[in-house]
Amino acid sequence: DQQVKQNSPSLSVQEGRISILNCDYTNSMFDYFLWYKKYPAEGPTFLISISSIKDKNEDGRFTVFLNKSAKHLSLHIVPSQPGDSAVYFCAAELSGSARQLTFGSGTQLTVLP
Amino acid sequence: DVKVTQSSRYLVKRTGEKVFLECVQDMDHENMFWYRQDPGLGLRLIYFSYDVKMKEKGDIPEGYSVSREKKERFSLILESASTNQTSMYLCASSSRGAGEAFFGQGTRLTVV
Image (tube, rainbow over all chains, first blue to last red; front, side, top):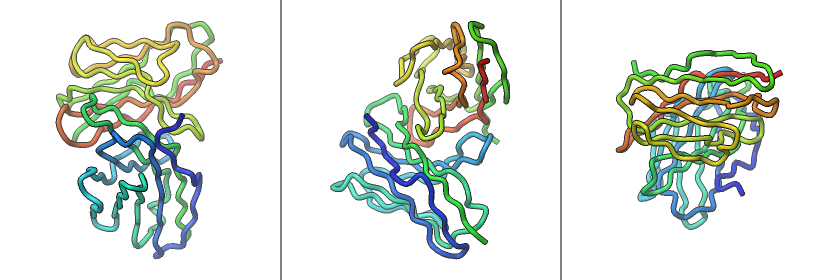
C-alpha cells in the first residue's frame, strides 16, 4: 500500500511557464516532506523541504505548499527552464523515526524550449 | 563538497552469485540507507542503519543483507543474485538531527 503517491507519471510545460507537481500521502504521522530531483544515471539531489508546522516554503524559483487537512503537497517551479527537465520525487519522513524516507513513484517533468 | 560514494556505477553479475555493493560517506552521518529504484515504483527502502553495527529492515529486505562495521561505510549484500534484483541501487546518508538525506550516484546492477 503506497503511503506517498504521485499520480502523474509525466508533465510537459513550456519554458517560462509554471510547473506544478503534486503529491498525496496517507499517513498522518509524516511530519517532514522533501522534494528530490533526479537525472538519468545519477543519484537524487535535494531540492526543497517543508515541515508539517508550515504550509509554505520558498527557495528561489521553487515553492512547496503543504495542505495537511487534505494530506497533499505540491511543488511549484516558476519560471520553468529546460534544465529543470528531470524526474521529481516527493518523499515523507515519519516523526520519531531514524529518518528513513518514504518516496512517491516520481513525475517526469519535461520543459519544452 | 559533501559526498556519498558508491563503489561501482555499473555491475553485471550472474544468477546465484554473491554480490557486494559498497557505500562510503564523508559527512560523519549517523544514518545510512539502501534503496532500489524501479520504473513506476519510485525508491523503495531495503535496509537502513542508525549506528555502527545496527541495522533495520526496510520495506523490501528479502534477498538482501547489510553490514555496517564502520560509521562511514554501509554495504549491501545480495546473498544469491536473481534476475528480479536487476535494478538501480541507491545509497544515502543523513544526520540524526535535521537536514536532508544525501544520495550516492547509484549502481546499475544487471543480473543475467
